[in-house]
Length: 226
Ligand code: DC
Image (cartoon, rainbow, N blue to C red):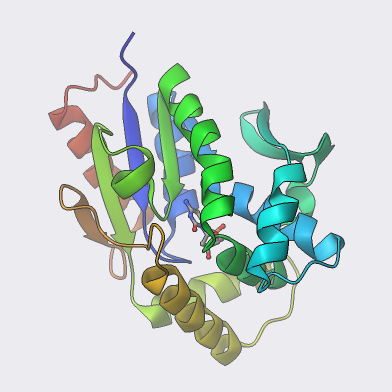
């Protein structure tokens, strides 16, 4: 049976995961967070003292990394070589390392089949950087979700402080700029808007307004929302 796939791409901190989780709930789709897979690979490298900037070493070591996903109470869990690492991949250090290791063809190739299989076997809303351009070029709905750098930095800061983690807004904004620069300018699958993607700038929109736009796009492609 043909599956309905929604692809959401965009830069760090644009609100992709918040939005995708809520759309998943409304549609009954499975939410697939591909950034978490790159983060799990990055964590593996950090824990094995492999420098994220060393392409050769990362490309060799990634062959030893088996990533799978499972869901607990509807929440995605990332399993890396049999161990649930979901609680350890959300730091800025791991995010920056993920941005570095995700630039290598070996890392991307390692995750491509898994991501495509997930989308082929069920209705998914999948978020990342190259879902609409590379992983699911035939996705039924493609969204490019962005927001200004300042708004994204504020959101990231709030997310961290809500978790009790101290943060510095200027440093976060600088991190976001560097991450955008790397994600957009790498040779393999750079972050960019697919030609047929709907651009949503969420800087001045509420979460519900963004969700409505996505649901409208899905409805216009024939999705009947339960
Ligand atoms: O969305 P995130 O912050 O969890 O992603 C972490 C890094 O992983 C991000 O800087 C770029 C990379 N990434 C990617 O290259 N392709 C994806 N589909 C998802 C994430």
